[in-house]
Length: 195
Image (tube, rainbow, N blue to C red):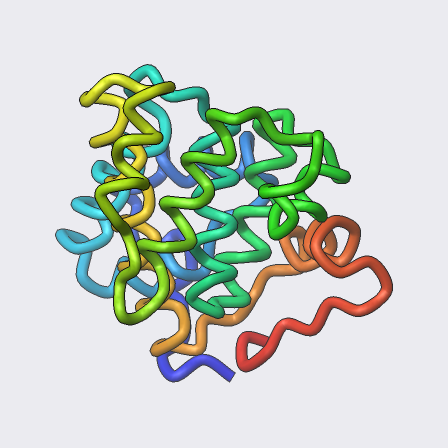
């Protein structure tokens, strides 16, 4: 049970357009956003940052979604894992690739560039942070400095979301739970405290 209930969508009419976008792309409005909407300035700032980090720039969106997924897995946030399995699928990652994300080092489903980005995501998402000069040197082989900033911003954005959703015990919506069931843990997805 969430610590604070999400607002109904019509409680924040100023977000009508953004909520319609979420429904059209994801199939639902995230409870995390509906909860943040109790303070509209926080929700607005988050939605703008989310848009700038994940949907602008030159790093392929599939890579950003997979980076977000593995960062959330490393942090243990089940809510964000389910959401990012859903978004990874929307942005063309195959179910096999989503299921194998922890095997990125050895799976032929991942390119060397993806491996470098996913390695940084894991290393930067654990505590204490294990990101190293070697991680950045390897990223430099595949991504320019602006793209490295995009990747680190993606990891940092999910540091915020992982803490938000785990702390608030945000209730997981049915749609991402179903995608997580299909991709992350076929036959055994448990939503954790976000049930």
